[in-house]
Image 1 (spheres, rainbow, N blue to C red):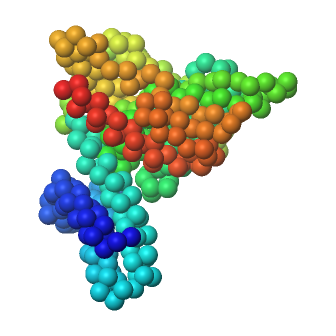
Image 2 (cartoon, one colour):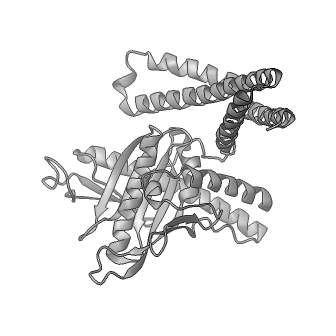
Image 3 (cartoon, rainbow, N blue to C red):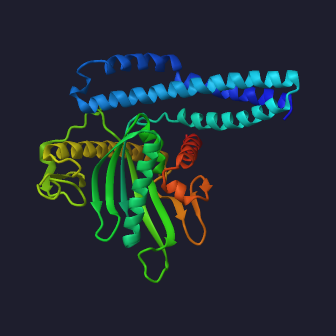
Length: 371
């Protein structure tokens, strides 16, 4: 690669990284990190476990953001020096190494740019994710379980804390539904593009004739509510039922009426939690889920009003959005962005960042086009 090409490409990356640094406002992030570090050092931090987890998770996320940007800036500066030295000395090996590093930096900076696109009302929030099996019988229930593992593995890869609130197991295999929380800043903005209907095509392992089966599972992503949301829920609007937990577990599971189901009578929204041993803990968790669903309903109602005024009928993000094909060929494809890979096993093992990044870019483009 010729020297002038390096100079142009490095200048382009420098502008892109400078734009990211300006949007993220590194000085503000460092000031917020200092405040969080002070909070973490407080001796009574863990008296409130939920708050402690939020504080430590946010500190870790912000520090990771700053470190990531700083590391890219350092690598870009080093690359410029390496190119300069290689060109001065006519060192082909150094120039070849520069080309490899340039490609890596382009990919890393493009991935970081996606983060700057998360500017929605609730994008900074943690995420509440619900997966439900839909059409396809036992295959759909198995598919829902595969998606649950996929998202939990994705969170594990990013070192995001997760808490599963409720799992409803299917009779033969898989799950009917599951709800879990991803406890990381911007988890909602990141995962919200995963909402919609997912489709799996494969030879059914549950069909003794080895026929191909198409099954479906739905993914719902909500922002976790915060104290400032102030959603008042009168006790008279709630019906609370208790029952015994179901599914695999250790001691006290299936032995006490600790699981809680809450029905919000005005809307018909039903939530349940059976993850904790204590009925009070399950009730508190179920109320948090209900708060999030009511918050999302209020947002959808506002959007519906705006769409009615625009007469555009709204968007269709909740429709079928991804296809996983295991037979007769191997492919996973996003039906909105056309992003696809030929390694379903890796996707089901949590490697979904490419789909998420392309989805965020697609959403941003759609928003700009409709504004």
